[in-house]
Amino acid sequence: MNKVVEFFKEIGGSTAIVPHGDADGCASGALVRIILKRLGKDGEFLFPDKGWSRLDKKLLEQLKEFDNVIVVDIGEKSNELMDGIAQHSKLCWIDHHKDEKEIKGDFVYFNPHEEGAGEYSAPPASYLVYQIGSRLTDVDRLCWIAAVGVVGDKADKRCRDVIDKTFRLFPNLRGSPDYGELSILRKMVTLVSSGRSIAGAEGAKLSAENFYEAGEQPAAFLLSKKGRFLKRQMLNTKRMTDKILDEKSYVVYPNLVICEINSKYGIQNYAASRLRMLFPKKAICVTNLALSDGSRAELRRGRDSEVDLRGAARAIASKLPNSCGGGHKAAAGVRTSAGWPELKKELLNQFSK
Image 1 (cartoon, helix red, strand yellow):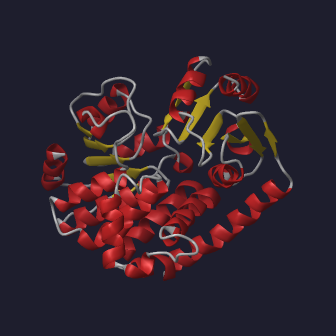
Image 2 (image 1 turned 90 degrees about the vertical axis):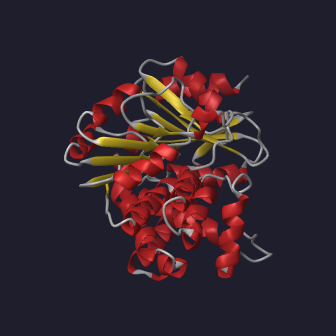
């Protein structure tokens, strides 16, 4: 973390901020930009294609125009990729996903797993950036942004300090007894997810900008023009997901539920979240054939399930050509060039065990 702090202090010239498009990534990116602003610097948001977790070729070309690159919450990485960026820009990469191989090079890489955080105990990127910011400037009243990222990654129990601080400084963000204390923060997570679902990378960028512009005023995140747009997209996403569930566009297996959707909108994560509530003891798989031709599958587990999805995703990917799998114990994904029939076959094999 000390190297990241020094990196931020020494930044000069143009800076690209590259976050993942989920709640943790958007919150992390916004915190990075706010911290830079308070240090008298600035940054520009650039998101991977569709807000996913892989740096695509077009984005890599864009990064060559920047003196500095700060990547947050992007789990698909390698020494080769990071060395390539570091050839033309000073690179700082902040992440919390466990790596399959050691990453080391002429760049700053901060990941608690590299410092013995354990198999699944590393806190989300938004929490890490918040802690980094606390060493550089006053970030106390930015805790709510970190809290949204933490809740989005379902790490509220591991990062209770930022949740408690949020409720202390912003008591209106605490939910009601009927819906749970995290209900408002979860609603904010849903807003971010809906932005990406409807508008891909542009929707994710809009969410990050909304966090950034709201700053120390969480109400502004909900009431701004961008916030109102996200609310409309949340309703659209809910309607589309309701239709999927009403039509039962999924198949239930003994240990797994597979949902195949065909939508130009990226609603697969939202559908997976809804299905995990319906099937608390099963693993959930959702693929969107329209967006990825079945080459990507999102995995979630029900609240009463203890299956290791990260391990399962890696095991499945190892059986398919040109594939990768990973993520977290409770939420993971697989990407392959083999196509949906082969991926589906391996999913069924893995979860029949």
